[in-house]
Each structure stands twice: as C-alpha cells, then as structure tokens.
Length: 74
Image (cartoon, rainbow, N blue to C red; front, side, top):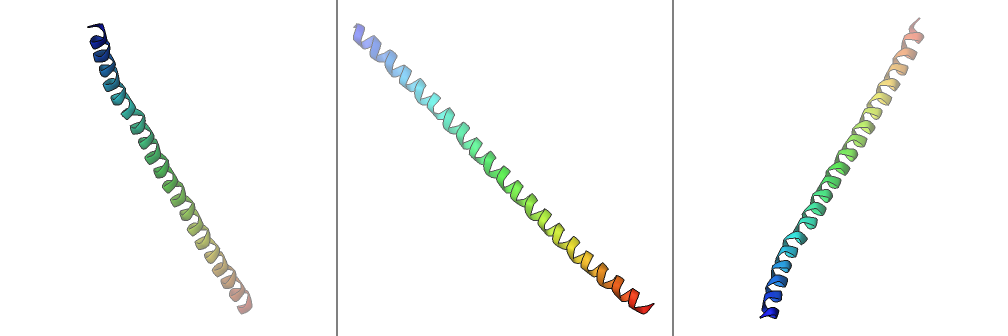
C-alpha cells in the first residue's frame, strides 16, 4: 500500500513538473520574439538615418552647385 501512494505522489509531481516545464519555454519564446522585434526596429532606424543622410548630402551638393552658378553670374 505504501508503494502505491508514493507512485501516485510521484505521478502528481511529474504532472506538475510538466506544467512547470512549459512556462520556461513560453518565457524563452517571448524573449526571442522581443529580441527579434527589437532587432527589426534597430535596423529600421539605422536604414532611416542612412536615407536621411543621403538626402542631406544630395541637397548639400545642389546648394553648392547653385551657389557656384550664382557666383558666376555676378
């Protein structure tokens, strides 16, 4: 009789451990999605800054060309 009660207790413990085992996987999955989202946002921000820098450089070159044209007229 004593052995049957320990096996029931052990079975209940395993069932509880199985439920507890699922939680760390869920936390790891959420962390992975969070890291992926953060990486996408960082890459988007870097790309946006690179595009802005190219536009500013292009406008700067246009201003220099305009300035040289205006100096040539006078």
